[in-house]
Length: 296
Image (cartoon, rainbow, N blue to C red; front, side, top):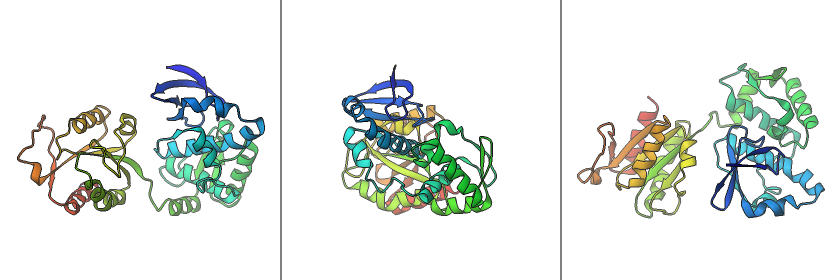
């Protein structure tokens, strides 16, 4: 692992090669995580004019920070960087920028009046602001609206601020969840339509990793698994990748729920007595079983 300057926050950080991408770890764009940048895009982006960098880089830094803070993976190229400038995901009004600050506090606080430490010097990307002066103005505005309280670097959501942030977040903070499956093409659709909504109801943001590389799923990613708060491993297909990835999660103390389709039980070989899968027949039944388990 070498060192390299992050283009978007100008911090010298650790960089790890991952295929055609470089992974930037714990810079101001992602203080507790990382993001990937296509290696061949580094120099073309660095060649942007000073004016273009001044306009774009704070926004890209803010996008990376918000996405990684929400446990989303970020992999960028020069095309992604330029298209993001016109994305509806990017706030442009002071009101919406203030909402992003409330959302950050909401994700990190346990409730109203719970302090969250924010060093402001390198945190104006929390509000997609071009400089710290705008961030301070937004904070003062939120204080005057009685949405937050500030004591030095400690920030607290008021009851009013918490309610507002909860409403904008759908009343819940979603935790990352990975589903490992190995089924035939077309089955992923059933998981998406029948199973994932029930998992979301329990406060998780589920994503399907399918070793069969079918549609509507993402490729296996150990990094995504490591960042998850829950893993659901379906061993109906007896895929070695599912066992391996689930074992990797257990090694990181990530809870694992095992499931298996009833038609596969007779052929099932379970390598450990600790694996006690929930048996299901239809996806609707599996959704109900998971819902019952997760709300206990």
